[in-house]
Amino acid sequence: MEEMKYEYWWAAMPRAYPCRLKAVAEEAGSTRRLYEAGKEELQSIEGISESYADDIISKRKDWDIDREYEKFLSMGIGFIPWYDERYPRRLKEVSGHPFAIFSIGRLPDDDKPSVAIVGSRNCSEYGRMTARNFGSELASLGVQVVSGMAYGIDGLSQSAALEAGGDSFGVLGCGVNICYPRSNRKLYDRLKEQGGILSEYGIYTKPQGNLFPARNRIISALSDVLIVVEAREVSGTMITVDMALEQGREVAVVPGRITDPLSTGCIKLWKQGAVPVTCAGDVLSLLGSGYDGAGIKYRLPTMELPDDERKVYMTLEPYAKSVGEISDATGMELRNAICALVELCIKGLAGEASTGYYVRAKEIRVV
Image (cartoon, rainbow, N blue to C red; front, side, top):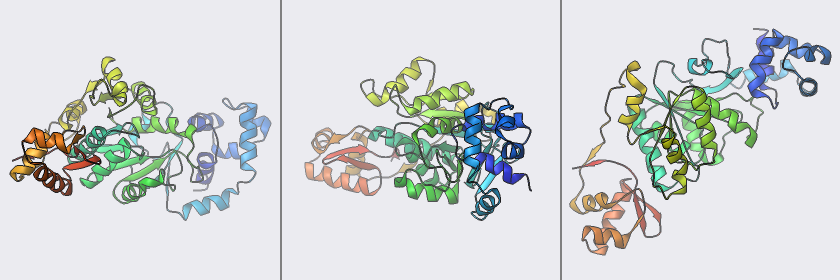
């Protein structure tokens, strides 16, 4: 389609006004007009100031539209303008939705329940365990997990969802062909194969701090429920919460210790009316009966453990305990407690938070 190259140009050309692309294109009548118009004509279009017109003209000078579009087509990356029937329904329903979406892999299924799990990058062991548990449990029940693929809560919940065999989708604040952060390369590759990666930014767009707040509105828009695992009172997570509320999304929070700085944001939201959730069943009740399986209550996986391992596991918490504390609590000799901890770590049920201190890494029902 000849006109599609102009749509691609308008969506992909680097600029500082991503949230205004759709409105301006509609005012112009076509993206081809935006590509061909001179400065005076551009300024006659509502939403285009003199500086914006200069920006458009300056940045299209070095843009060979035919060459760039052919190059893009050869990369096998999806391009979905807002009017395309493939464009996610949830996203189209909110104001300020992107002019177009770039994608690798699949797009979220409009007919499946979807949750966004977000939180601190520098999370605690409690946050890590909780993010993994929610990601795994919800994905195993057919709930799609959406997040920003960031280090910490976001990436942990998405990795757990994929490991459980479920669907997860990462929304990036850069081009979809750029893995950011680099430390989540394994997750990025798995999302390409098992889920999907989305962005409103063109393939040339590198990650920049000013792009992420706009990205967050897509994360919240693609969800039915936004779950905040850990967040400080002032943080990027709270920006996502504000956007979710503006979009009419349900906001849920995971309770944390009142003395923990990483819980201040969640506690504040709880006081303001956010729903506290402690398990997948709580989230399913928020999703309601509009989805198949929404009434299913999640059952923790069952595992049989030797007596020493069972005692130690039941003593562990998401907050770190020393080997000495574990030995005293179980009444076991120190060496036996250490042996049990090693076995629990091998099984993925415990983790060493720091030298000599251990936490519960996974929730199971012990028999």
